[in-house]
Length: 225
Image (cartoon, rainbow, N blue to C red; front, side, top):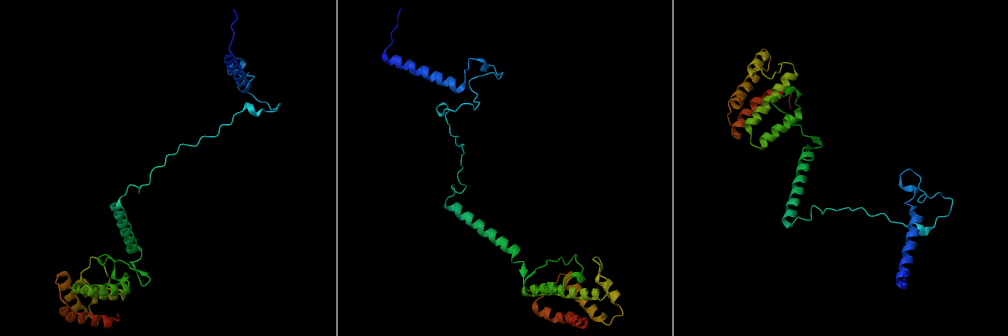
């Protein structure tokens, strides 16, 4: 029995056959020897011996990577958030200023000294003078008496008239000063210092001005200025 095709069906069949032939030419005969993975395929390998037909190859541009960009961390900040952020930046700047700028005075970094632990002979004279002025500016006259006494111990130690030790008492220093011309002045300074500092006596400015000469006379005689 003969089956006749319409023109439309005939054209569709011819188009399908052409596409099938082109696919075989492009990828090789997949029904032949090339399907076993043994390297014997004869359809998909181009050996360069004949010119390449550009119609047989299709160019597929590389796809762009799917990169997701997270929103800025500041996008969610409201007006109040920006205010707090600004305050944080200001406080950070103040902290940096205090740590790296305010600790320098006259081009020299201020040295913080533990007067309880460090030997007086190792404390710079300029640092003791700074501490004295600081105590006086605050009205800490009891602290100023202490600084005056450290001036004295520092100079006596540098002259090797006494030997400073952390656990030594002032009365041990008096025994070491026995026979020295400055003994009496040192004895008076020790007495005032013991009462005011170790006795925890707070003094006002008029009282300080009366006691101060007992220390400055000895310092002048020792040559400490």
